[in-house]
Image (cartoon, rainbow, N blue to C red; front, side, top):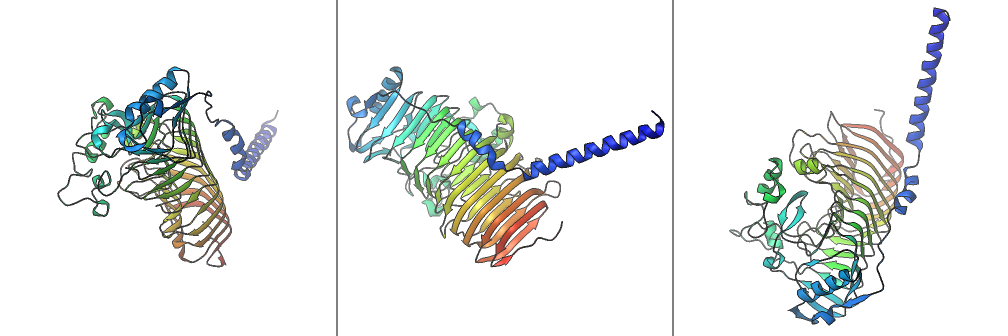
Length: 472
């Protein structure tokens, strides 16, 4: 082959490769991410339990709302687990209890009219257990309902879990007067409390030496399965939580179905999947004092140490009332998040701040990608419809990345202050954001962007006008 022919050969080959790459990129951009959903859902199989019942009345519980039923509930759970599994029945009536530990193959089942009234005495939640608190591992008070490295567990039924938290207990530990705190009272923001925990994590202090609990005022979560597989929370009503409400950590195959969550205390996030995979949240009602759903993966150095993202999170047919955001990602997000699908849901409240919110920072770091929403009906929100904020709280050396967000078929009757607010870094812009078939009414400001890349609006109408973005 002559030199001239050889040159032609390489030019043709190079052109072909470039065309192939371009075609592949186009196919990737135009592919429907929702086609992944059936495969993800096929992996989320709710646990099943043997047809055996263990009624807590048979183990000494009394339905008077006063007698401590903790020992009876524990005995019923142990008997159920030792027999190979089944249902632990909480019958109609009020039962006072301390923390409940669920073992493998046990379904804690509350019949209609049953109420578990959880103690508000912090001493009842000792000894400390291995847990995560705001994204950092430590030894702290037991969550109200807790499981550690168990398989096939559930809390089901038509009854109520009542944490009994209010302005006289748990909530004042936040250190805010609107939650009952008084000047001079101790609280979590004292330098040797919450901040000490975060500093221990930055200093890589072993978790076994991060001993908190009594005297440190770090409120427990309500329901926390930790490192568990095949988890089901179904049907129950959960009210008055000390802090985060449903918080699966490092779990796999979690189903939350038909739950009602009502709690207006500080940090009353409704559902916080954290470093968890294959989580299906459906048919659930949220009315909260913080985020309705907040997807997390660990905080700062501890999140990077563990380095497990939350992935394959599916949200369907939910209703959100009060809350800081309907679907939120962050801020404890250092391990990253990917593949979030939210669809066919309703949001509406003057006390709901946002529809979709991503909050992170250069102290958190992490990669947030592949976030998809469709078929969302919104009455009103107070702040923004969509907000991506890379400057939430402290700054550091770990610039986050946020990319590949697609929102379609979204209607909002009252969009609050700003329709779409995107804030990235010059070195790490918010990128690949698509809004399609979106209508936002009654919003003060259409949109505001800083440091963004590849933002696409397709049939987006704000305050009655179709929005055409300037070319980048």
